[in-house]
Length: 119
Image 1 (cartoon, one colour):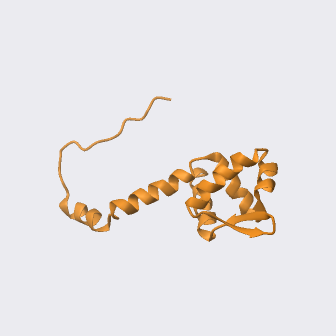
Image 2 (tube, rainbow, N blue to C red):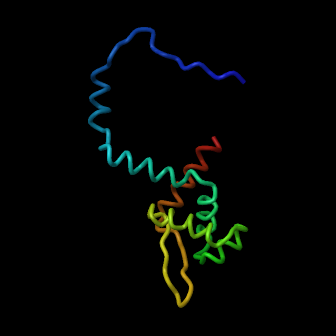
Image 3 (tube, rainbow, N blue to C red):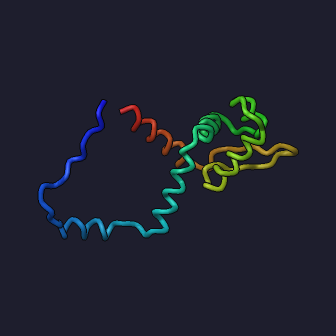
């Protein structure tokens, strides 16, 4: 299928009223950067798979490795990224460390992403 051409204006006309609305609502650069970094975390299918496991249960690295047919070091690396992004949290119980979703926002973000791709 050929790539669709992007439609452009025939004449250059700046709409100051619209630009003012955009300018007034645009978040600060630091917030935009942080948001982009958050969405990068969702750009890895392994991390998405981990989140889907955590939707169902609080589990340890051993459980995740078994469920996803991966090594514990590979799971630990991805969990570190998810934890730095505040998407998962951990708690120690004896010799085990259990991981769970940090909050309900994670489930909402994934649900809305799925809804979008299914349109």
